[in-house]
Length: 214
Image (cartoon, rainbow, N blue to C red; front, side, top):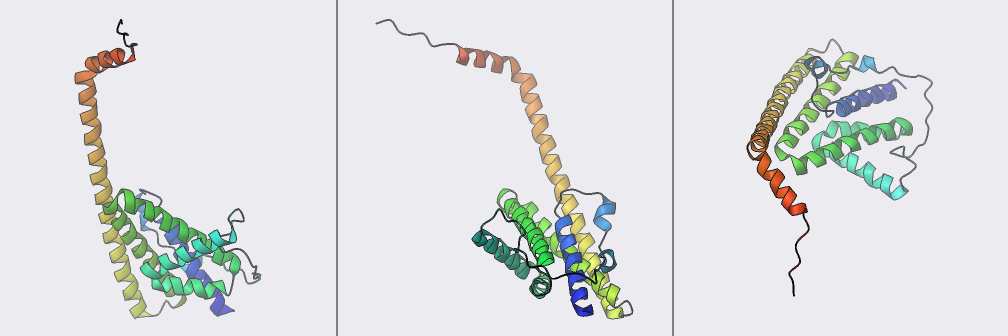
């Protein structure tokens, strides 16, 4: 039972990190938090409740299976340790497994949109998710084994990678913001310079065309 609870808590901590790391720009305080396993309160009386993997009965069984597989593939590709914990949790607690899969699917979908619309920003956000998820799992493991110095050093290195990635994310967000400001300034200048001509042109375009006499 203790092993099951440990795996369960490790997974919930990692999934919390996964769901929080892609919510858009955050404050430095929010970015600094890494969720320890102690933040997840175990329920020793937890019942094993069978539930659809994504917990959404509006979807067909086939759709749920496809989303579940997409979430597992995403975890396996970018964080194999998390994928292994997911598969272990599936046999322990179907309800929490469904929640975890749903969160990972949402993350993979958000990243998929970014990959299409902003490939450069997609890469730094993906790196941030991976760094944050890895650091959170290590924080959870350290909570269970606080005297392990090797694990403590590994956690320190993971945090260093996480904060380095956060710097890259903020640099990329700042560059995107500057580009947007530049576009707005150019647009404002064009409106102020050519506004009257644009008004006259739209008036002409709105007037009915004269019919040619036969």
